[in-house]
Length: 305
Image (tube, rainbow, N blue to C red; front, side, top):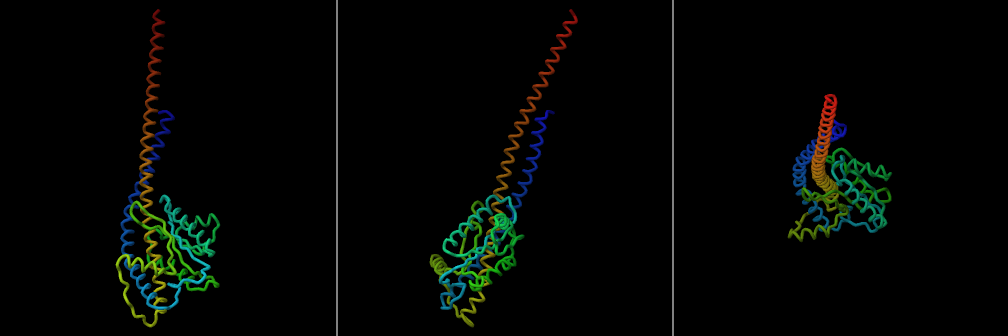
């Protein structure tokens, strides 16, 4: 076997092995998407009803609370950025990071200081490489988050929103995550969690034809809002983590399918080159045999004379 043919066969074996790996990763990601979608669907009713309850309390009272009251001159904001722990998911993490960068620039353009909180190793690595300050970070659960993980993320954010700005607190709380729309579409979005935009919620309810229920507050509206604040932040973060997990699996499945298809095309191309090299070797061997036979026949004819 010629040297060129050996090179082609070695590359074909390597690409075929890679193709098997990417195919397996594609199938694993596809199986996890369904579970992630179910978790997203299961978390939506609780988050929706909790938002409705908060809105009802806020509209039914005159209590000023960090959950619903805009600061007169907001000076500091917090951003929660959700990325992935692992790669091989196309532009999933980079798109979320770009959305967070755009939001940061906009908030700073409004004269606000920005504290960044990051979920996922990709985001932590990005900010660490560029030596950007990170208030706090969490890793190790982005592909399958639990409610306990959401509570861990929410704890310092709740403390920050309840603390005065002069003492290191924040006036606004934003979250950047990847919204799962479908198997083929996942959009990075930024949303302001706090203060809650009552006009937006009321507009959505009126569009859907919903009527907010009436509540009696005991012992007071402020105490009710204090109790609802951590639940609201935790549920919003949990839903964002679940949507991001489903988006990550969908992006990884799509990236691995593309890699598998490309590997198959490369194997076909290398096989054609290997066949051409083998044919060239066979042609050369036949030529050498024919040449040798002709030389022997000429030599034999010369000796007979």
